[in-house]
Image 1 (cartoon, rainbow, N blue to C red):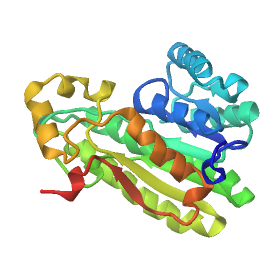
Image 2: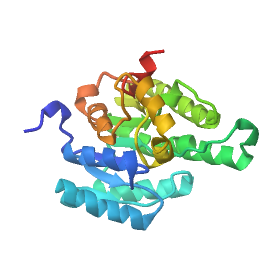
Image 3: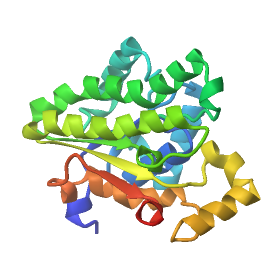
Length: 258
């Protein structure tokens, strides 16, 4: 029997960028905790494949849905959220997971590259949160979780724009907490450290960088996407009702040591 504090039965979650990687793992975790989950990404075919896999993996049946739309387009977000709620009911949990990385020295970073990373990592969270928040406010409850990053706090050469977007996302958490907290909505950030995903595959394959991660991280390893599931379920459940405006680092201790 599920601990009732962490039981998400009867709740509906929208997870953006959930066709693969961290988003897919987070969606699976929410399904296992009892929630109905709406998957989102731009690639409709890949999203449907993921929906079928998760339905089979978790025996979720009709609790998992796929709604493809572009989270950087305000009109598409409006229509997509409406479609998601028509399929699965009012959204109780929003996980803003969509993100990208682009590595280049700032002297070589183009205008187009800057606008793209800002749109994908930051504007998307603004657009989807803005669309979902009014319903949460009306109902007097809701959970919004931003997938931030260790780079919300720390920086490395070659990814300054990425750091800027993730730092801004962590401050967006605080701003929304101030606005939505009085209405019974909790807004928090979940910040992964160095995780082995599609986004970091080139770094994982680099022996020198992997050695640096292992030495720099007290846990001595790359993170596994399953390491994020427990913290997300907590932030999505009644167990975190008095936690608001926080960015929780799931990083093996890397932000705690020099």
